[in-house]
Image (cartoon, rainbow, N blue to C red):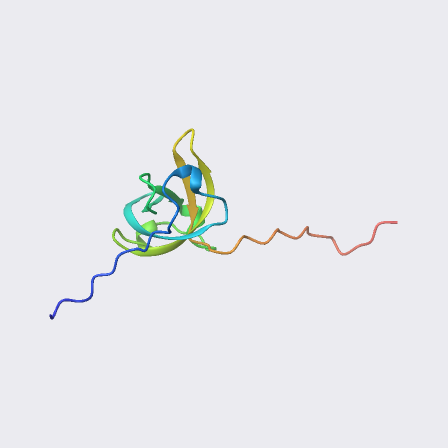
Length: 110
């Protein structure tokens, strides 16, 4: 068969609804749509999650199409899941951001 292998995302067992999602959970999903403000990813819970453009890279992203395209299989981290509003916030940044250190002027207070 000369066609390239067709790969699909592996959905996690036991995660079927938005209520099953927890912040920090790493999942595999398929990009279903890309918009100017981010990308929608199907993670297998009958509601696509949004990866906001600010959650795609540590660097500034002016066009999400440069990062992902529809049909891509990606690893995402659940940032927030709100069953009441049926919203899922996702991130392509798999590790939690480090807290920013406070800047000091270098002078000590007396």
